[in-house]
Length: 337
Ligand code: AMP
Ligand code: MG
Image 1 (cartoon, rainbow, N blue to C red):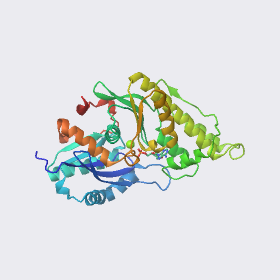
Image 2 (tube, helix red, strand yellow; image 1 turned 135 degrees about the vertical axis):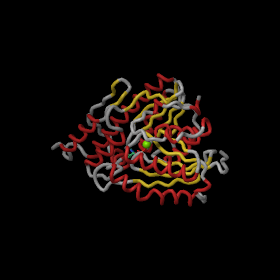
Image 3 (cartoon, rainbow, N blue to C red; image 1 turned 90 degrees about the horizontal axis):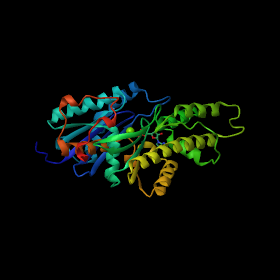
Image 4 (cartoon, rainbow, N blue to C red; image 1 turned 90 degrees about the vertical axis):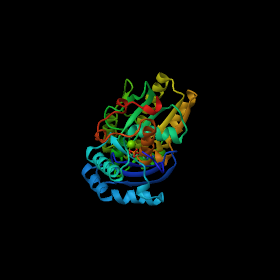
């Protein structure tokens, strides 16, 4: 295959966001366009998200092409997120990617979304071999590269951290995504109310914390003895301390000399401060993925597709089926061995 322009179109479609990024093989991002589903009430309903993505996908692709000032015929490679995520939503990305690949007669790469979060961070932060804390609406993972794979050293046993914060926010009437607003509320208080802190081995559990925070805002003492600011502060302090403890232990275990913070929750200044603190204590480098690329985005999918393509080529069509539950530690990483 003669790749004339070295251009990749990456499609992200695992959950709330349909995103298209156009990236050169060098890693230069030419365009990135996101279409995020925002529920009017409640959580992320897969059927409603699917409807939005199906209605808008071509418009977003065209906008990304326009922004990059290229035509679709100039694209050399298609990359898409095949795992993990919500089945009905993953399928849209996979179908569109397979269709484009066959229509244009160009190779396709199926990408694991969690690995893409790490790879875009390594690339943009110019960091070689980090311990990664990946915190988002759908994932909470402490990972590092070892023995050919991104091994998982710690993870949530129930709900992800972003989901914890968004669910709490929803209960107090804050629209989705609640993270930034909860962060702002928490900044107004130094009052700590006891909440369950659950670290089991290297894994975390946030569901008891969620229930306890909910009980605090339903209690008769709420707004008499403490405020929403206090509850938001206590929720963040507890959850982030749990994340920090597990990250610190994984750091000691793996002996890595860099920490990378990524995923949508990486935007949180208090979490950044806590992880920065342990980085200093252990004299390791600390980087946060540039916020434009911290949440779900098509550029990270394109870039990870490029890494794989450059090392061992594209995937066969038979390898492009979605896998909603695939763990990143099941995948060997040819471009790092
Ligand atoms: P992602 O799933 O990676 O696209 O990230 C979305 C998640 O990041 C949602 O759960 C948001 O509430 C969360 N988030 C965004 N900004 C912040 C913030 N400043 N603090 C905490 N969580 C945040
Ligand atoms: Mg994500």
